[in-house]
Amino acid sequence: MVEGPWTDEPSGGGEAPPPDRTFGLSERDRAVLDLAARTFSGPGPRERAVRERLGLSPTAYFQLLNALLDDPRALRYDPLTVGRLRRERQRGRDERD
Image (cartoon, rainbow, N blue to C red; front, top):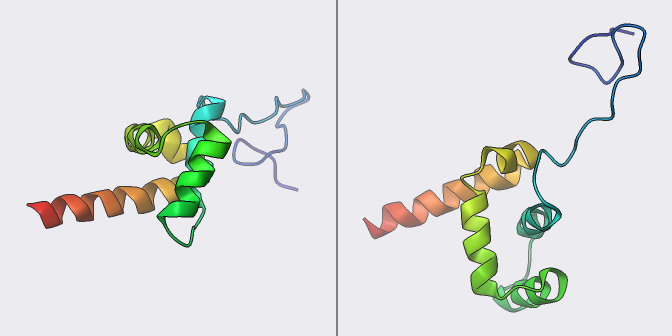
């Protein structure tokens, strides 16, 4: 087995600390990103999930999500979702210009 900084195996004699899968984001921020990663059949189910799971209004959810898209920690936490949403946001901006 190859050991080194790019593996989960400790390189040296000591135990490696468990990796931080939160990337410095709060539990709420991670929940917002996790919900954004899901697909919904329309706006109704998403809005219901936002209210039930996060306790936020849809407006507050989208404001928080928009701010998270500019946070490098969010990109490290879920690069596929953040990248997709950044592209969608930019496409909307380009269409308005």
